[in-house]
Amino acid sequence: MKENNETSMQRTLSIVYIGVCVALMAVCSWISIPATVPFTLQTFAVNLALILLGGKKGTLATLVYLLVGLIGVPVFAGFSGGPGVLFGPTGGYLIGFLAMGLIYWGVTKLLGVKLWTIILSMVLGTVVLYAFGTAWFIVVYGMNNGAVTLAEALAWCVTPFIPSGIAKSVLAIVIGRVLTTKTSLFTEIAR
Image (cartoon, rainbow, N blue to C red; front, top):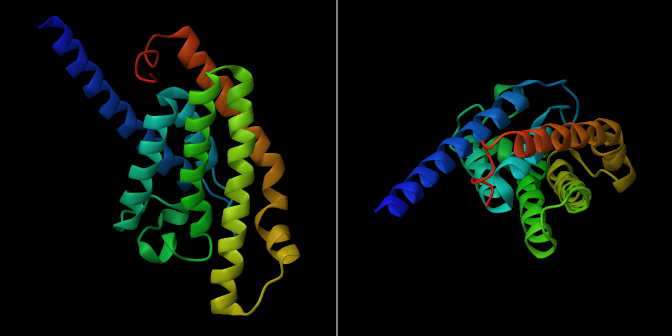
């Protein structure tokens, strides 16, 4: 009987932590500098959720965040939401967050949760995020505004984000590692 209560408690904590991470993603998307693709702290929040919750639950938190935005709750950059944002020119970057989660989940499940696997999964996830988001941008932006070249799309959507992306990943790793190794809050949840 005691084991069932612990399982129920762990399940409840997982749901709460997923909700907190979804809220963190929303708040971090609102901290925004407008541009063709806005500068936000979303990637920081997604990476932190993956570190704190593990690949499976972190990816689930990202999916919930996207679904909340899809139904119109203003959780995306610029206090926006709805299918127009998710399927608009920059929506590929939002959907790419799922790829980041799946890559993190796969790498850490296969190779274990170690600092180097976290870094590897973040680098691979970010490359896939940029590739998917940029391809999406070229197609959707091109349909609505005329053709855009790969070089133009990279100059607008990727190159300006590389330095801040590195900084956000490092910050997520530092905060995530401190919270998972120095406290017991997330130790059981990430499994």
